Image 1 (cartoon, rainbow over the protein chains, first blue to last red):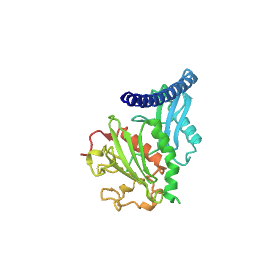
Image 2 (image 1 turned 180 degrees about the vertical axis):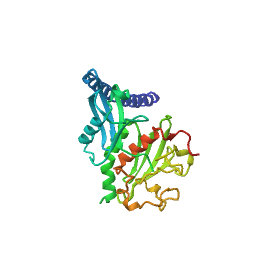
Image 3 (image 1 turned 90 degrees about the vertical axis):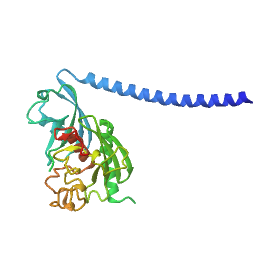
Image 4 (image 1 turned 90 degrees about the horizontal axis):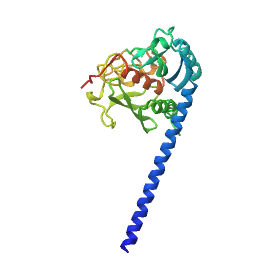
Length: 126
Length: 152
């Protein structure tokens, strides 16, 4: 009798562990998939190109640009692609730096390979 | 039937969710008109906001600094120091924040703005959606106007 109870408990523990293992395996597969996607993107980047990951008011934008691209050209491309209002004036921000003046190139701001930027309407608070 | 505010918020939350997932922000949706958002700052600390979107977009949302659990909105220690948008009175100072209006909140620095005209206010500058507002606050917390010393 006691052995039967122990067996049931052991089976329940085993089922629980198997369920946890499946969750971990699924998460692992998802992570591997993400890594593979990142690898593919990185392989697409040629010399003197930058992968930009830009947070915009309409969600994320990812694109590859030559390092020599002017900031203003990037802003125009993102505004067009994300359907942002062209009447607004936007600025690109990298960490604590606003990428201005916008006629300078990406590389002149020290950007290389991959960079996370944010695109917002201009403003400094009131 | 959903209200106009609920429909607007539902539409605007799509971009905010995408940004939060992509940038590792902490977003908790409380109900169709309220959410809790955690944003990292330049000093690696986190700041949290309770956002009330009742009547949005007729009126702007209320962006209220709070604690990590969203239970306190009255503690200066939950508010960032700084200048510009990060006002010393403890509110985000912009026409797109309901709390910036003196008529709504006594801390609101602006008695000279009309809340019903917030989208036409020249200082709004296109910042009219929830994702745009969150991005602006994130940039301020990581920019030169942010002061790591909290207000309390």
